[in-house]
Amino acid sequence: MRKMSYGLLLIVLFLNFALLSTHVAAKDRIYILAGQSNMMGKGKTHYLSSNYRKTPANVKFYYQGRSHKLARYAFFGPEVGFAHSIARAYPHDTHIIIKSVATGSSIKQWLPGSGLYKSTLRQVKLAGIANSPKIEAILWMQGEKDARDKHSATQYEDNLRRFINGLRNHLKSPQSMFIMGEINPDDKAFSMTKLVQKAQKNIQHSSPNTLLVSTDGLGKIFDHVHYNANGQLELGKRFARAYLKAISHR
Image 1 (cartoon, rainbow, N blue to C red):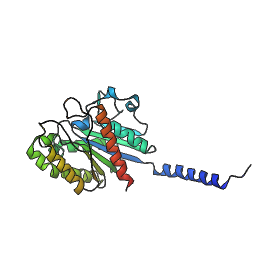
Image 2: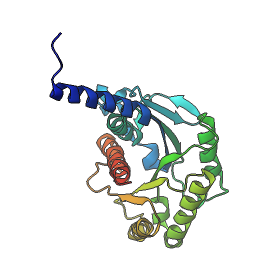
Image 3: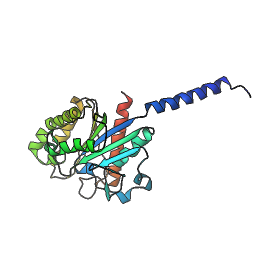
Image 4: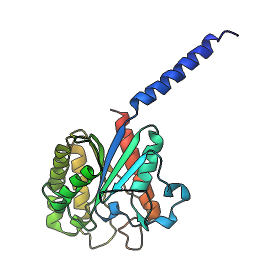
């Protein structure tokens, strides 16, 4: 048998090391998706390509306390674009996505001790995850409701900070990424939009491991408030890009 060349030997050793490293590094990554109607999703599923109607093999999606396949109902949210992006980025890891949403909800309804807050913690427990799971990221798309009222918009920054700190504390994941989508309803009824946007920007600068994702250019349905299928798909991808970029610098 001919002797293996030195160069070929190095390549074989490198590939073996890479495979071993990948196996060792494989882990469960847990994400919480929360918010109001643009997190719930108004994107029509029948506009999705066949590829996006499939659930990646390394993704587990939990909604309303039960395991579901992605894009199995008439409408979908940003979970589809997010799931496919992170599944490709870390193909050897298991990605557990837990969605807790309430259409038309205000930030006050999500504060620690509230029904929606308790429900979110319960959704994590119902997903059958370990007692003290590390949450990789909390994705947040909410604030349109508060942009309709000056009092709510003025208090939005303090209330959002309470929500972030409370959730990280209860989940025992103080370093979890908190990634929020910037609200941008195009309707006169949301007269305090700029005030809520300012609060979101302030939170990004003052709260550690917190990012704000642009929603500029995302397609919307007829009401100019809710994102359409392409908009929802792209929103999920933007959430994923923000998360992947952030953890690459850790």
